Image 1 (cartoon, one colour):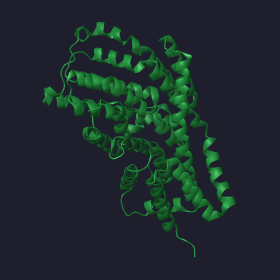
Image 2: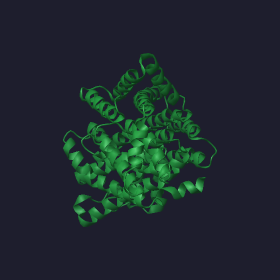
Image 3: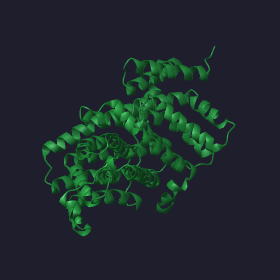
Image 4: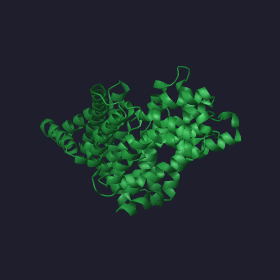
Length: 440
C-alpha cells in the first residue's frame, strides 16, 4: 500500500527534528533525510543519482560565485580597520546631540551592511567598537545592546545581501531587482531604529548623555575633514552598486570588483599584507563552506520532496485556502517565522521559496516584493529568541557581565519595529517596488 504524501511530509519533518535533536549539523541532517527519502522511494541507484543531480545543478549556478566574493570583501575590509575608522568619523560628524552615538552606530551599520552583505561579522565589529563606547559614556545598557543587534542585522536586507542573492537563485528572479527593491525598506528600518532612539532619549534624557569631546564642538564644515577615512569605503560601495544598477556588470562581476576593490582599499590604508590576505581567504573559505553545505542539504531535500509530489501538495494547500490572497502571503510569513525557531535561514529559504514563489505569482503578486518580505522576515529571525543568531554573535564579544537573557530582552522593542516595517511593506508594496521600476 502506497504511503500518502501527507504521511511522508510528517515523517520528513520528524526525521529532521530527530537528527537535529541529537546534535547533527543542519547541512548533514537535510542531506541525510533527502538521501534516505530518495533511496526508499526510488531505490538505491536511482535515489543517489537524483540527489547528486540536484546538488550538481545548484553548484553550476553562475550567480552563486558572488557569495564568496562578497564574503571575501567583507573580511578584507574588516581586517583593514575600516569599521573602527568609520565609527569614529561618524561619531564626530554627528556632533553634540543626545543619543548621537547610537544614531551614528546605526548609520555605520548601514554602511557596513553595504560593504559586506553578511550579518555576523558586522555585529561582531559593532560589538567590539560601539558597545564599549556607549557603555563607557553611560548609555542605557538595553538600548545600546538592542540597537547594535538590530542595526547589525540590516545586512540581511541592505544590498549586496547574501540572503537576497540566494533567494534570487531559488526563486529565479533578478538579483539586481531584488537589490533595488530592498534598499528603501532597509533604510526604512534604519530610520525606525533611529526615530525610536531619539524619541526615547527625548522622553528620558538619562538614557543617553551627550557625546562631549572637543571635535564634536567644531563647526560642521570643519568636522567634515574627519570623514577622510570614510571616503574610500564610500567609493567602493558606490562602484559595486553602481555597476549593478546601471547594467554595466552582473551581480557576480560586481562582487569580483568589490573583492579586488577591498584589496585596493586595504593597500591604500597600509593594511594589506600576505598574512592579512591569507587570513581573509581562510575565513572566507570557512564561511562559504558552511553556507554551501547548508545549500547542498536543503536543495537535495526540496528536490526529492518536489519529485515525490510534496511541492504540488503544499502549493495546493496554500492556494485552496478560503481566504483573501493577501492573507495567504501572511500565512507564508508565519510559516517562515515558525521555521526560524529551529532552522538556519538558508535551509528555510530553500525549503519554502521553491514552493512559495510559484504560489505568489499565481496570486498575482510580484516575487521581487515577496523576496523583500522574506528578507525582512529573516531579519526578525536573526533577533528572535531562543536561537536569534545576532544575540549569540553579540554575546561572543560583549563584556562578561552582559548576559544572554539581557540581550534577548534588549532586542524585543527592535523586533517590534522590524515587524512594523514588515507590515508597512506588506501593506504598501510600492515601498519596495518603485526603485526596481526605475532601473529596468
